[in-house]
Length: 101
Image 1 (cartoon, rainbow, N blue to C red):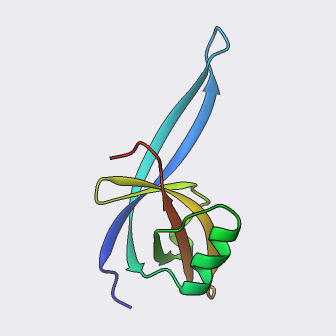
Image 2 (image 1 turned 180 degrees about the vertical axis):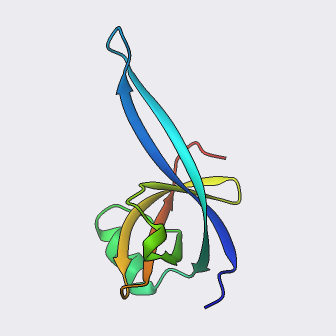
């Protein structure tokens, strides 16, 4: 399989400082992916639960470590659902984050 796209998988770590404020730190790492179209059934199922899927990416299962966000073409997306097609490929269903640009 040819991997045509590069995405940044983003890990968000939350810690507490000395005065009790929550600090969020994001760490990104690049992986190869394939951008795919959202299936019609996927779109309507997500809409029923109030989600709006925009993009889907396929990545190697070994590359995905449970991240909740990704960046593609300078836009950050929330990973709203994952689906492991087989032991090697995982689909990441993504929705845009409000206020990102």
